[in-house]
Image (tube, rainbow, N blue to C red; front, top):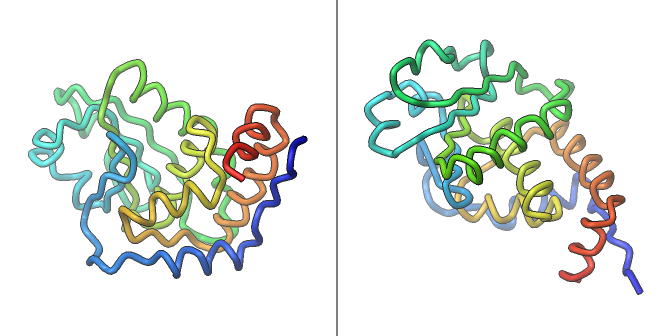
Length: 187
C-alpha cells in the first residue's frame, strides 16, 4: 500500500533550512551535487578560474538581470551556455524554467560528462531553486531532500515566492507514478 506523501508548507521548509544552516562562511562557489557547482557572479566572469575548475556548461540564472555574460563572453572556451532572465523577486515566475534548466543540467552531466556552473548574483536563491528542480526531476528527490542536500554544501536561501513555486512543483511531481514510488521508498 502506498503511503501518501504530503508536501510540507513553505514555513516548514524555511524552518528546516534555518535548522540545517551551514556554519561555514559563504564561499564564491560550492559543489552542491557531483559536478554541479553553484556560484556568485564573480566566478562566472573569471575565465581563468572556470578553466581551472574544468567547467563545460554554464547555466546563468540571472542573464540580463545582473550577470551580464552570454555565449559570446565564453567564445573559444568550449563552454555550452544557457541563460534565463528571471528577477529574484517573490512574484517572478521561475517555475516556467524548472524543466528546461533541469534538462540542460541532466544533458550536461549524462551526455557530455560535464561540469556545470549554475550562477546568479549571489548564488543563493535563483540558482538554488533551479538546481533543486533538477534534483527533484532527475534524482527523484522530494523538495525537502533536494534543499537540505544542497544546504549541507552551500548557504542557500531561496526567496519565499520561489519556495512556493517549488512546493507546488513538488506536489505535481508527486502525482507522477515514478515519484510516488520513490517517495514511498524513503518513508
